[in-house]
Image (tube, rainbow, N blue to C red; front, top):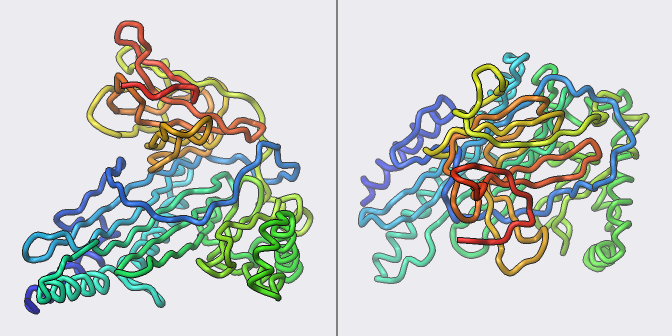
Length: 422
């Protein structure tokens, strides 16, 4: 048994170090459409409001496209029992006009994957978790007990802002090795012009004043929610100092409306939510180019089959392979922002907006103007399986779905008033 354990661990280490070079171990799922029921508990991200931001400075710049791929590895015991599910989501940035900048960002994102796989700081890596899973299996086998739930480690990531100045990512991690799951959060931000990782001190000519402004802003954000602030104060008599301490590296990101800070899991009890400092609060101290883009124009969407389009009449900026199926053009006339393609699940018992929940983000573009995305997918007869979201010039979010048109074999876009069918 020990030789078996050692062999598995050696193999895992080889593949861990090769992961960012594109080498996949046997039994690894690496696809832009994940099919997994595992979930990662997340602290709520800073919510975007519908009101337009008053402070502006960034340039729209070159279009940023972000693809996401999920890698899922299953590890089995000698009797073929699954003992570990290990997964992570990798974002890949593409900036057509600045490939060298995109390459620099992607290299750093790859290093973050490697740190997660091999383990860093106080968090275990894949090999350590697998060793614990094998030891656990050996123990329950010896005791002739039920294995119970297999061990798991899952990390997800979502981009929170992308434009000509900055690209931000928010990571969430969930590790279960028996007992209480462990959660972790972090964020990274990159300069869209250079590809360098941004720090808080790099955002202002007066870093000390900027950090103080952010600390005061975090306290103010908590105080605005009287119920939240009262709950926090009950567990911590020095809550303002604890809130101010949340302003630190690797837990902040650019959101649509401001700079958001992620408390560590359990750091601020009982609340688990990101705290937002509006851009208006830091205007005049932060470098103006890191303020959000001033948006203009409106966009409208349509979907058509590729074979129904005359060659040269549609400018496609990318192709997304979701599954074998029909080749479609998702077209935009005018300008739409934060265009996102996601898989989703539908809650039959909820109402309104609460019925639709994004599951896995597959593709994102910072903006689309008079162009199209080519999508290969199956168009179901019943409930759609892809959700298209975008925001307009006023930062209002919209939601669309690709469906059968009901006329012949046509396809159409429907809004979120659809009901579950089929």
